Image 1 (spheres, rainbow, N blue to C red):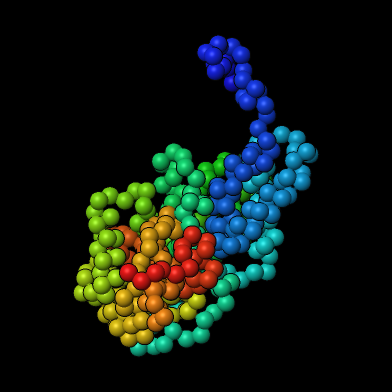
Image 2 (image 1 turned 90 degrees about the horizontal axis):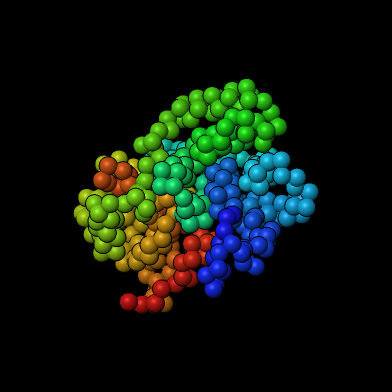
Length: 343
């Protein structure tokens, strides 16, 4: 590490702290955020991703004394995490978004039955999956955790999914991926070609995955989101639709129903969704985008959790409002309060 200065200013003598090896727990924990991002892309579930990383850490801790160092600790952890994810994906159904399952519905239709949580792509706090680093790498990472992109990944068989994430998102060499998966470079390249073709057929583009990242927001985007919050809390539907793209969508997992366009979104908010009038929005971040905890007025006073809204932005307009209604699980994950006091 080179010479260091002691507290008295003498050079050439290492301090006791720098001479001591880093504890094994810290060596492992240093990789938790990026591993969580990897497992989240693989599994499409915030809670399954955290379970997978925890299992990865347990397996790594138990085997650390047998780690021979022929690969980096990071590569070794990714190998364990990949195996954990592949085990968890065995026999499981593909997670999706409402728009992946059906055509848009009319605003006059009721939401229908709630589907099991295993049906849906789940949102994830940005801070748990996006490590700090090089700005260019961080921008790629943000795009690769957008809800649309994570949903598209679920179309791929699990091993193809791992190959595409490792090669395209994390920029691993084909030889590194082949070693991790115990296969050949030719097999990795073939899997990557098939994965790209599948995503192309699903029309996954940079526009599909675009969103309003809080890290890259300019003043115009901040103003747009401020106008959205003001309009939603005031329930000013003229102002609200003015910030929406003409083809904006509104989805509400765990319901399959989703809406497209100003007319249907407006009709929903004045019809089945009229209970949202008077809501308050608390900002958070999810999947590299701005998100909000939505609290509806409670008849007993104050405000009760209603939805986690993930707001996607492109071209100076809001393109999607993704309202996840499983607040009992999601609000604690995002550190949102259980209720809000009266104004």
